[in-house]
Amino acid sequence: MKKVTVRTLKKYKDDHEKFSMLTAYDYSTAKYIDEAGVDVVLIGDSLAMTALGYDSTNSIGVEEMSIFTKAVARGVNHAMVVTDMPFMSYTIDISSALTNIGNMVKLGANAVKLEGCNDYTEKLIECTVNMGVPVMGHIGFTPQSQNVIGGHFIQGKTEDAANELLKQAKKLENAGAFSVVLEMVPEDVAKKITENINIPTISCGAGRYCDGFVMVCDDCFGKFGDFTPKFARKYGDMAELIRTCAKNYNNDVKSGKYPDESEIY
Image 1: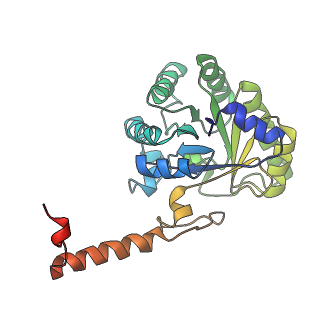
Image 2 (image 1 turned 120 degrees about the vertical axis):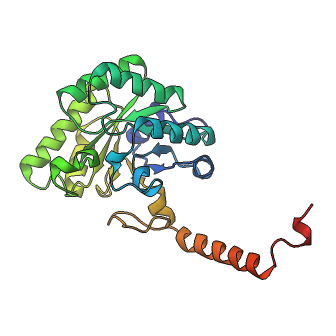
Image 3 (image 1 turned 90 degrees about the vertical axis):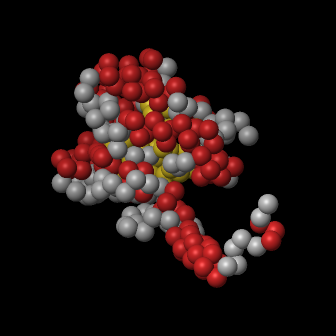
């Protein structure tokens, strides 16, 4: 399979074909996701909660994201690898932001994802693209701004709010973003945005009419059970599998069944 690039995703949109994106946080999971044919692997800052046990995505820093980016990139051959730039890693000033972004690419990311849309973000996207790094935008509900938003709320519910989201999407496109995630946006709003911009849209709880779709791998695999978004579909039950395997191992150790003769040197 050929490597997925920004051109691949644009062709998907132009040809009206859907594409998939899943998060991954370690080498083996990324390897299996890649072998399954998923188009984009995202090192999402959601790992702050699912992998590190923090209360929010804002708790993870550049150093931690660097470790996970290196691990995931080593496991991927086909998919595009995108790294979420963590809270405060790109909002202080352009210079430090470009340094942090460049380091993620050196560690194996093919692109980065930036949340929000304002004058600063637009300028940063322009500078990042000029530096040679593709940028995925992210509007609607932006988890890194949840303290300002006031919690997890659907965005774009009124006509004015919907028009503002469309305006933001167009600004991100004009700044040079190659795609944009729409999170927790009404389906009809996401459909309108998708039909009125030339870059791919990615649904994260934004209905059926976007060009691509993203889900957190722990939700998809049924591994993380602290909470599950409405839009997350569970394709397996890894939590129960892990509990069962660990319980069976524990019982075998305590009963003397492990190791047996075939498992010793």
